[in-house]
Amino acid sequence: MKEFGIIGFPLNYSFSPTWFNVEFLRKGVDDVSYGVFPLTSLSDLDAFILQHPALLGLNVTMPYKKEIIPLLSELDPVAAAVNAVNTVKIVRHGKKYILLGYNTDVVGFEQSLTNGWKINRLSALVFGTGGAAQAVGYCLHKLGIPYSFVSRNPIENGFTYDDLTPEIISHHHLLINATPIGSFSCEIKVLSLSFETINEHHFLFDLNYNPEMTPFLEEGYKRGAKIKNGMEMLYLQAQESWKIWDLP
Image 1 (cartoon, rainbow, N blue to C red):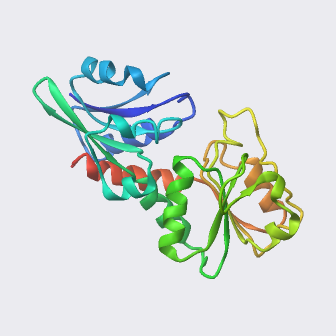
Image 2 (tube, one colour; image 1 turned 30 degrees about the horizontal axis):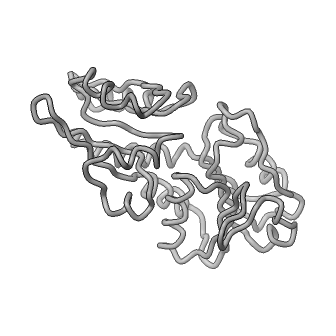
């Protein structure tokens, strides 16, 4: 049986196994499974792959989207530009293998962001600086949307949360949460920012999808902003992983 799955930690919130296993059934793909593999450290990756000789592909989520890169044999140009990987193809040659890294978050985010939203001529704030945030920044640059990252610590050409005045938020109409804050697995539920100047001219995108209505999106919804969570993005990036793994 061919085996695929997701690695990260923790993984009790992931909908990826449900999506893939439903798609296997819907498309009549036999002898294939998709599992959940919570690795507490990537130092265990080689042993893990050797223990799963039928494993041919992995999705990668927090906190390993950047950490996995030095362990890869080859890196797709988009993943290299983003400096983050969320999909790995395992090519086996007997007992040996090579790992190929890709980033399907880029496709998923861009298609979801532009699906039904007219976001040209907007300026964006991207909350977070991790692998998901880098994919978001790559897409915004491609779309010609000016943006700034927001971090807990000072960064070049960006803001800290303490820097964010109501005026700054009022002049950035596309707000994107690329942190785990507000997700089911995160103890912190609300981004540390002022919401009072958000209005019907704002677009709030939260890459989290569990819960469906995160506190970040709820604050925007109460103020008339257009909102979207990361569920559509999840499906779209999963479809790209499907193609990379050469599934029928």
